[in-house]
Each structure stands twice: as structure tokens, then as C-alpha cells.
Length: 131
Image (cartoon, rainbow, N blue to C red; front, side):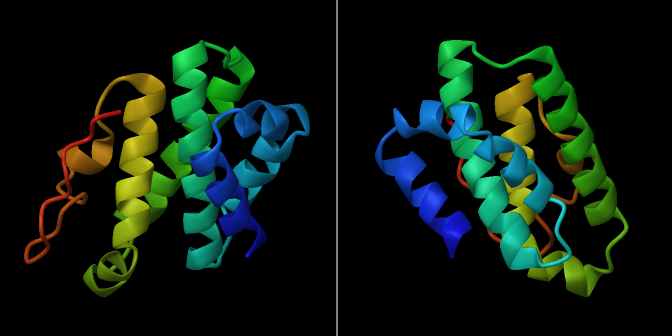
């Protein structure tokens, strides 16, 4: 619930992004984005996406943070790539969040697109990414 509250605050007021970064909460979000619990991962990824969008606008990301983000997202992509078809269906939101985060942070599509794991057969295509 706390992760969802952080996401809501970041969504409603982008000036809160600086406070979150100054308090080091972005590091907690990165830690929780690797959680075993899918709901915790999704909530953390949503918060990280809002921070990434704000950071992209202000060019305020350190190379260390970028490297940690890249490592985190590569780990999530590898985890998603090794899932069964049934599990992939259950983590649809996470797949979209990981792809959006990758695109926002690195200005290129994630390998989930290349592997055909972003939109599975029978799923609606995601809305275009306008970030």
C-alpha cells in the first residue's frame, strides 16, 4: 500500500519526485522491483517509471543510477523471458512497465519487444508509448 501511495503522490505532483530522490526512496523502489511478490514489483515499477519520466525531463540521473536501473531491468527481462505462458499472462502489467521504463531511461525499445513478449497472442496491443 505504501508503494501505491508513493506512486500516487508522484503522479499527482511531480515536485515530489525531488523529495523522493533526496530521501533515497528511489533506492527502496529499485529494491522492491526485484521482489518475489508480483504486486510489490508492479507498484515499485510504477513509482520508478514516474521518477524516470521526471528525471528524463530534468536530466538529473547519475550514471550509477542509470547502471543500476539497467541491471534491474535486464534482470526483470530475463525473469520474464523464462516464465511459462501461463505466468506471462499473469504479469502483463509488469511486462508493459518494464518496457516503458526501458524506453524512458534508454531511448530504445526493450528486448521484450524483440522477443515477442510484450504483447502475447490474444492480448490487446498496448497503447502507444508517448513518453
